[in-house]
Amino acid sequence: MAKVRHGQLHLTLNVPDNDLLLDWANTADKLLAGHITFFDTGRRTARETVSFTAGQCVSYQENFTAGDDGEGAYVCQLIIATAEKLELTPSEPAGAFVAPAAREHAAPVLATTVASGPLAENVSVLAKATNLPANPMQPARMELWMGYLERRGVQFHIGTPEAELKLFDNQAEGMYSAGGGTKTIYLYDPPGTATFFEEAFHALQHLRKHPAIKVLESGQEVDAWEYDAKQALLKHSEKLGLSYEEYVETENQLQQVIDNEYGNYNF
Image (cartoon, rainbow, N blue to C red; front, side, top):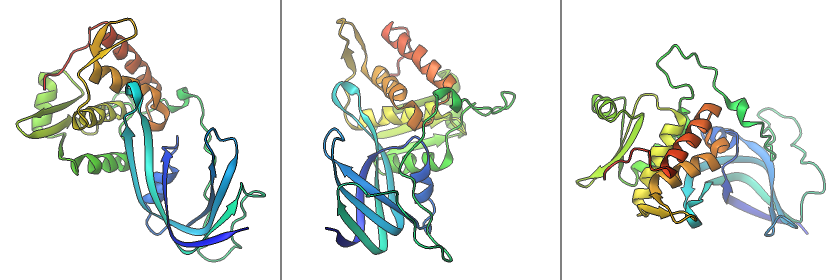
């Protein structure tokens, strides 16, 4: 039997491989219709479906949550608000979701399936002749992450003379530095996607007091910050938007970390 609720729907989800939710959140007046099905552990049984005909995404945050052995998860928290009703029905929908009848300002249907193609399809086609990175960080997502870290005391120097000098001196594309009560990420403008997320991960590692040394199954000790950050980039590469070249480069850098040939920063 269906139940009706009014107000807001708070969700924590894996970040999708496309930018549908991010784009929705950045368009405050955009109304979408859709349904969300909740499953039990293992996705064996659909427990309940929440449907709405005109919802707004009033809050959206992304976060990298550390997990066991540094695996972690790339999740988002969003809030959907509606002036109409949230209809709760047992199990999954009986059929495909039907949008409301056509009307002026009718809400488009929110797709619930995400098609993911081969990683190679993400290869950037930006001209190499420019000074831009081959896969620059998406401005909306960068602003979202910068806001999240700035609220936790992390400063950003992007394309400033100080940033360019520090990066040039260290022959780096990006750098996280902490000391004297300050926490700062230095980047070129615009930063590459992999570079931005790696430095953001280092900032999160510092905030969460991530261990400095990691012992691999072989008994070898490696730099835990570099190892776990690069593992996270590879694991979540499609959701983060890494290009094929960035993926391969990160794999190479991870091997350098394992071989103790990758440069380390001093904090």
